[in-house]
Image (cartoon, rainbow, N blue to C red; front, top):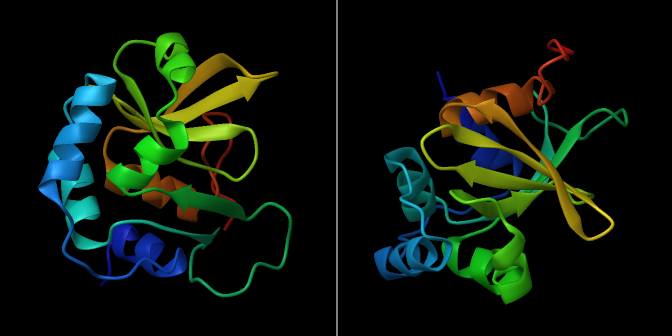
Length: 153
């Protein structure tokens, strides 16, 4: 049986590749965070991707299916490595992707993975979705990113 991480990687059209540990180290230095092993493994195995996340895969048939863009460490720095963003980011939080709209997918060092809401160019709130990357992908596939949402499948 495939893990939620493997299902999410396939849904986002990630390609199996050999990542670069130097890029991960550069990401950690820029954001002053230590990446957990599950994130390192994802980056070293799959890199990045984007697509519709839903249990069982396939083409989305409703508006409540989650879209995710998950960046490689190099792409995350290219897309989110602005000094002004770094200055305003809460300590221990590093952006690693987005939902294609107003939320960033973030690593919250020591707590897990979640969403950071952007409002009018500013940072509004950080919500932890899962303590591990696997838990984050599982909740993504069940469309239950937010604490008050139950699985929709």
